[in-house]
Image (cartoon, rainbow, N blue to C red; front, top):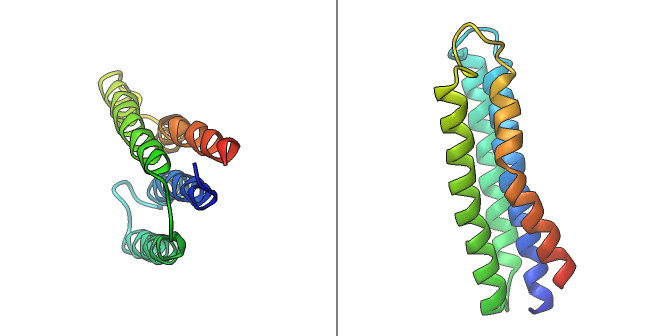
Length: 126
C-alpha cells in the first residue's frame, strides 16, 4: 500500500461519522418523524460531509490498487453488516414507535463497526 492510501482511513471514519451523526439528528428531533428544523440540520450536516468528502478525495493523488480494494471491501462489508443490524432492529421491534428514539443511534453505532475496524486496519498498514 502507498502512503496516499492512508487517506482512505479518513473516508471510512467520515462515513461512520455521517451515519451516526445523521441518525442522532433524526433521533433527537422534537417530533417523531422529525421537524423542519431537524430536516434542515440533517441537510446542512450531510452537505458539509459531501464537501469534506470531495475536498479529501481531491487530495488523493496516487492510491494503490490494494488500498482502493481494501476501501471498497470495507464498504461492502459495512453495507452487508449495517443491513443485517437494521433488519434485526426493525424485525425485533427495537425500532418500534413505542421504543425510545435513541435506539436508532445505538443501531447505527453498531452498524458502523466494520468501518471503524477497516479504518484502523488501513491506518496500520500504511
